[in-house]
Length: 71
Image 1 (tube, rainbow, N blue to C red):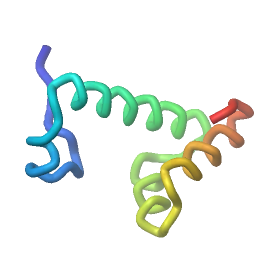
Image 2 (image 1 turned 135 degrees about the horizontal axis):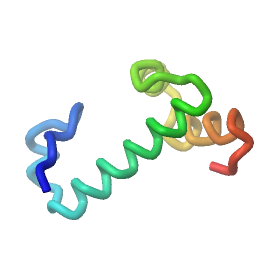
Image 3 (image 1 turned 90 degrees about the vertical axis):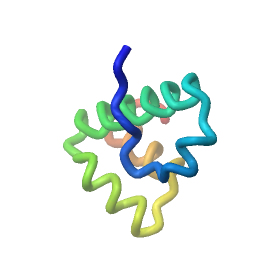
Image 4 (image 1 turned 90 degrees about the horizontal axis):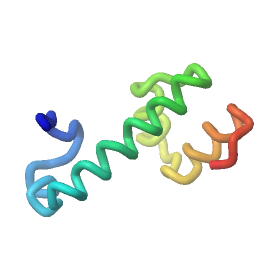
């Protein structure tokens, strides 16, 4: 399987992750992006929300509340 580099992950951090951890991270990000798309939030908007201080947990709660799903 060919994988693309993890966007936003520094080379130093990427070097610390095992291939399985990298795949788990990639899968988790894909799921979050899919959930965001269901409620009309783009990946760029989610990045801006995180940069402005929202935690990943809060982002997931927001997306879950917007879809009626439990996050």
